[in-house]
Image (tube, rainbow, N blue to C red; front, side, top):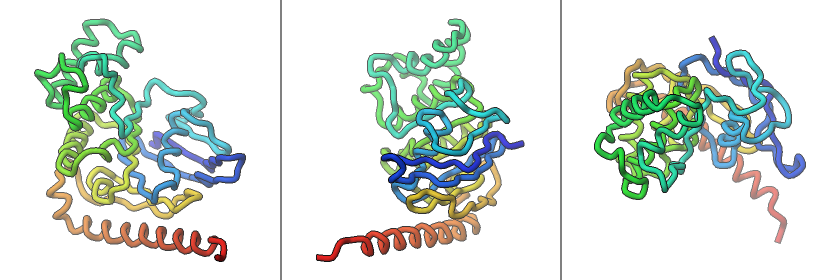
Length: 265
């Protein structure tokens, strides 16, 4: 069953002068992890923001569970690159925030926070403020806050992009483990081909602006996954090379177009 259905989605800015997304048609199955790759400015973040109703669309529709999305839904959680933790709240209070907004009882909040603190490996840091945590720890806390409300859909906008390489891989492993424990429908935006292959069941490659779907690749690597086993899989090299060539072609075409439109000197 499809969890998310997107039809003919188009978004423009500057009175229609800038086309960010054009005629996006996409279906995401229930509990599928879909990764979205593409050049900078191709509309990846715009797509997530439209799904969550943070911005409007010009044309088309988004359905979740067969219902037209017209306002933010309580079963959709978003994780951005910047952790978004409240600096004046302790770790446990940050994780509890979404539960409090939903009117959960204090015993339920306490039990849920305790569970997710343990799941993300931050037991002993419950009373710590964000500035007392490393970047990786803060991102884990942000992920726990999103997961704690038990969303059916998880939208992730380059959540590990600001982390160093080692911490980024640790967070990928953490996310894989969390999704094995609690399957969710996830759309994960990234610039990293490696990250997309490690995390995704399918990978959407988008074109340069106006953002269109150029190709969709299936990641035929079984779960549960570990980064090292994924990288040693024959399919990993095939996918990486094919996606790299496609993105390279997009960038070259975009650069050629920019040069062609430069005024003569």
